[in-house]
Image 1: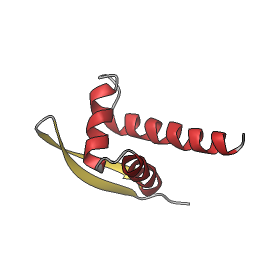
Image 2: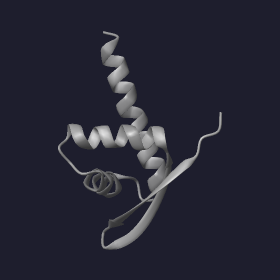
Image 3: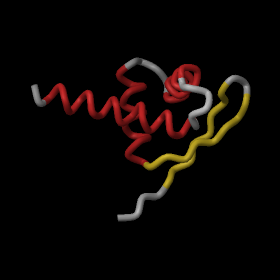
Image 4: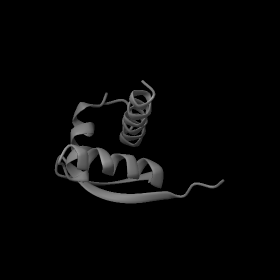
Amino acid sequence: MKHHLIKKSFVLSGHSTSIALEKEFWSVLQNMAAAQNLSLAALITRIDQTRIPEHPLASALRVTALKNAYDISDSSCA
């Protein structure tokens, strides 16, 4: 199964940046943003501001999405 990356562009801290993630991660992040009444850009900015600076933003987004998806599936098993 081949996963294609989807690239999206944002302005973070006044700088344009592009982030490439698999569609599944973008879907989870979009759902997270909607659940928090945020735009996707606002959620990305929040994650960017709280990540460890040495960690790439794309990695921080994937980990955040994974943790969110795990929390959802874990709570549905209770």
